[in-house]
Image (cartoon, rainbow, N blue to C red; front, top):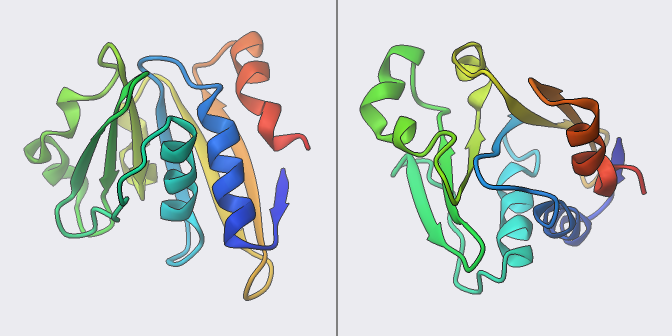
Length: 152
């Protein structure tokens, strides 16, 4: 668990976390609107040396970012029902080689996934967030690799 008191800290946490990712990882981001999910992804992309602007895919549903290490698929499922997910093209990116997938509001989709990383954002105050990481389908060794940035 990490307590982030600023968006800059959340961006740095995302950047640190990105160094732990491997091809095929799926990251579900959960929490309230404005909780820091897109801010965290901006940091992850910064950590992967992506320098262009990062936008929330609230209306486009999927944004694709080409980074040196991976292709990053960033999806926002807030407005979708589970039955609509297959029509988005998201399933093409799940577990794909040389791809990491970030899914905002992905908890309603998690029962369809064999393995994923969940990062949960909770409000503590207007500017402070409690950020926790959990896993499905990852070994203890894999969990240790990914928990590093969340232990400081």
